[in-house]
Length: 392
Image (cartoon, rainbow, N blue to C red):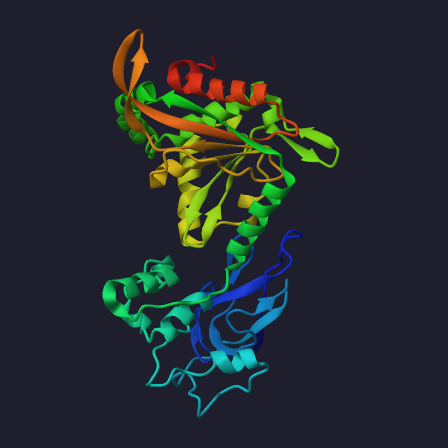
């Protein structure tokens, strides 16, 4: 019996998807729940698993093709068992229904390396530099070879000096679109302050081990910042608002987007109702999202909503930056690298672990006074974390 492989139902905010990677070729045996193909939307990468055991009989769309919700992209012969290797160019087993099927149902010849598992950008790099992906160590999901792996292989002497033009991924296109939308539609301004994280670091040192034993997760810095932001958002409601036409919507909850860097670009999964979350719940949720982001397991609903964003450029060594607001949100908090610096404390010069923090905000609805007081509130909480834990 023939079973159709369909694009999953896409939410209204996502109009279509792009075939990113076929993990099977025509003629390959597939197992129930085994991932057949990755579909890239402008927000996340979706996996399409097989619903039955059988053989992949037909592939209707090639890598790079655009497909729509519920569109048939392949056919599985349920219950069948592969008795011969995948078809060669001289002996195809299934008549292609489109040019895409021709490209995916032909096994590589002896003179060319197999690049079928690469992204379009990765395939271009490999083929233009005559690189066999089998010779490259993959760092992607499930050990897949990425474009960056190929570029690093070339830099290490594995190929000629390249010059190349590659298409943006769907996610990168969406990021570019959102950033330009933000710059063109928001009157953005950034305020800065600095925080002495000495007491936070002392608390982590003292309580980090029992915290991990109790909750099974490490106590990081992000939970302190997320909790401080949630508390401050309750006091300065305009920072937790958004513009809708000529109206301002004030959110009575703190749904905080946490910026996570992935191979394909920046994603911002959302922690819901952070004002009601414990430190352990915040750390657990962030760790879960980070793992899902690395493995491509984030769902569309994980990225939707959000009333405020926190981004940590300090992870990569950034000392100071002006983060860009993520519309329709009105503000974003930027964390940076912790550096020991001399500061004046009670009339004495001491060395303290200092961090610059930045708040970029929509000056159309947030006045400078509110932005500065919000940032000072976060500073005061982080410099007195015991008061923050007591809700003071």
